[in-house]
Length: 222
Length: 293
Image (cartoon, rainbow over all chains, first blue to last red):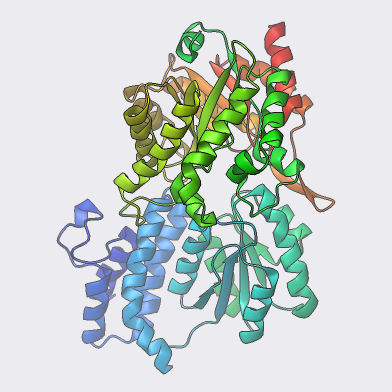
């Protein structure tokens, strides 16, 4: 593989955002995802190739480590930040249509719940894997999800909840979505959830970690 | 007797059970700020504390888990941080029987410190300092820093406690199992946590929440393997939540909880209580068990 792409992939995996960013200490002074992505474009590498051969695999490796209990939230967050720094150079090509998005992913933390660490991680990971992400924020009411689906009829929906007191609101939201949009896929996630809970409320898929959601989406467009 | 004297007496301290699920049972709606009830429904808060004292708790935690101003910002209540924490402490103290204790609960901010998030060490410390001042003024016996997952964030809270009071504190994090032992979601190991808290002079060190008493036993064993002498605090929740007739139920009844207490007590905890989903009945069972040993 191209050396530049390899470096970029490693920068994303390691959470090296830019040359000036202090993290990780071992990569002090080296180019980060920001500079390396710019250099790759200047070297004439197609944005789609950068996305598929550097950014997605880099994020995938850290996502896998997280699933395996070998990396934790800080490493994931900083890798996602590095990914975003690279992605901002790719975004104009999405807008121009040169690179096609894989689909639209609408995500929000359900009504009553204000926690967003998990929701943000999933949103960043999925955006990094080539989807357009519509982030509805926290404390999202059913109507707001319905409105977003109306605007993006083919979207996949993601619901997040941290509290046992708010996970029940997922059932309410899933029911309302299903009544109008029986075929859209609905992903659920959050600390107190389980496969059993996902099944009981009629959602499509549950994953205990963001990488699981990314892989599910990959399979759904394959 | 002060809280420190009580802990060093080596008689196990019985803590309380959940506050959140008790509030919901009394009408708190998801999305409402639980700390606001300290001033809007003080009688309800007092009733919950009294029910735990009555069930056998030696120490009850205040309803101030989310009372840091960074956390209250989400409800636009940050300007009332002092008042909500002071009120929370006064509610519990007003129903405290002679010889028992009220501990000021301090939970994480929900934000990430730099470089992973945007919050600075100073902002984080200031946010906890308001809670500490308010509850020290109200007359709590100590603090419990609970459900933390980030070592640096709990250090901010400890800093706030030490700068603004002379009171002792308990430090408690939430762990899950990984291939390399138990770690918090931020990647903190039991060993690193215990060592840091011993250096910081925590009166009790331990864990709360998680996935029930059975998993808490494994975790407690790891704490013991790291330190034979650490004064251990254990506050398990009532198992994994599941959906039953549209409502959330916890898998571990007071009976299940009680039947596993022998194994937990064999690890010699200094303090024991319940977290999410536990109620005064769980505490009554803990009390019966401890009294019978």
